[in-house]
Image (cartoon, rainbow, N blue to C red; front, side, top):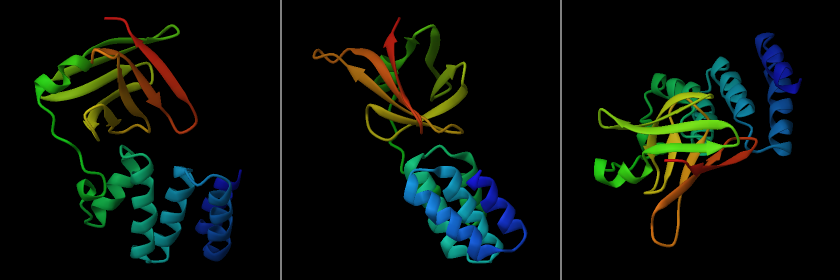
Length: 173
């Protein structure tokens, strides 16, 4: 409800009120990327590029794969790779992550295709980019994947961290 109010007030050029509601929402949930994106839009409508870029940067720092924030930052000619650098991993380094993973009756597949690690699941497909050797983010999705290893170093599962929940997948094959 409040998110809609931010957009509605901004469209009526009642920017101070829109920002007040948006900032109150962030007090309640500082990781609310929808609110941060709305505040970025409010700043952009006021031609305050620095503030808009600041809010969009916060979105990417929380969820590096956020497509909307990435696209807007590119329009501002900001190098998103400097905000969220990606590690370049070799095919050999990512090979242990390739496979099928199960959470309840949901199947997620991780594959290495044309030099890129990808995820396919009922939630959609995405390219995975490495933040560390075991933690990746999805381009075009607000999810981070952390591959879990047993004491011998064998990949046994993956933790999918979404904005509002976490799912634990077990490696099926």
